[in-house]
Length: 421
Image (cartoon, rainbow, N blue to C red; front, side, top):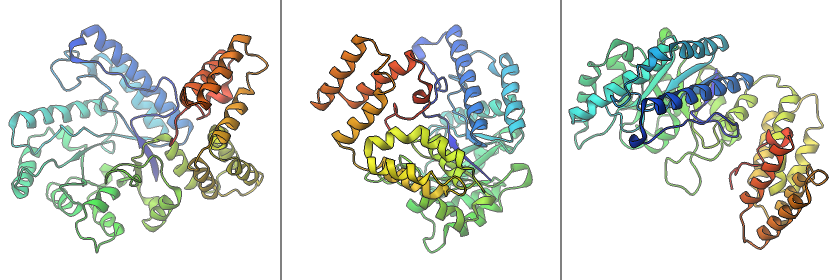
């Protein structure tokens, strides 16, 4: 079993993906961006390995204009050594990676130009994984597409256009139910007919169910039959509905009690679970820790060091409760820890709690900051209290001080991030 996240790291420098506008495309610009993105991907892979994250979705933006003739670089050849090296690191760690083309990659469109571009885009995604020399368990996820006012014809067109795909693409392609058009039963019928593995998405199924009388476990078992040995372990997408947002919106974080209920009810150990959530790696580490047998107390202490000032910003009571909880060094419950953490992070902050956190962090600098830095901090703080400046502005100032004075404990924390605000 592996638990992973998609595309982007939260709170880690030099891991973002760059792109460029069409008007700015030059060969030099493309090389510069590709080099940057590949280095960022390498940093992400290293982070995942260090944090026992063995499932990851690579951004489709890795190679700018990768499926377009605008990019004339044979990047899969030019960067073959770098891509191969990344693949070796992924293989050696046991990590499994995937890609997920965006909403404009539509194989069942009635427009032949759209279909041709979709095929080129799927070839581009396949080239990334092929250039890394990764086997066919590393997948490309695709939705069926639109209904175009005639779903039976649209399904037929998907099947016909699937036959146009190169074998290398077919070996990697998996299909997924969506939240508006194609329910899990329809996707399963297509998968079984074409011999394509099916990814079950729990949130999509809750919004666009096939038959509400059938449980998630029922559909998971049906989907499992589409996964062959060469495809690797059955892979699913797991997400939770964001509160007070439109249906289908992913939550800011994974509620650990709900996740564990899903995990235990549906034999989570037999699945590879891709989390789709706003806080990405943060929730992933949470879920990994809560499903790791005999987790050491030091893992939770490490998490606490990252979150402690965020919690203090919202609730001193929660801050003290978690500190007391972690005094149990022999058998701390990861689930109980994260429940306390979630409660603290989602408590309503006040001027008092925010001030408490700011001055705790300021304590790292009060004896080393210059007189002008001290004056700047207190001026920013007063402006914040009077609602003349934002909390993030004050945090950004403190982050600059942390960088200047090499306060790595703070820099490795999540305090400077705008978590669930």
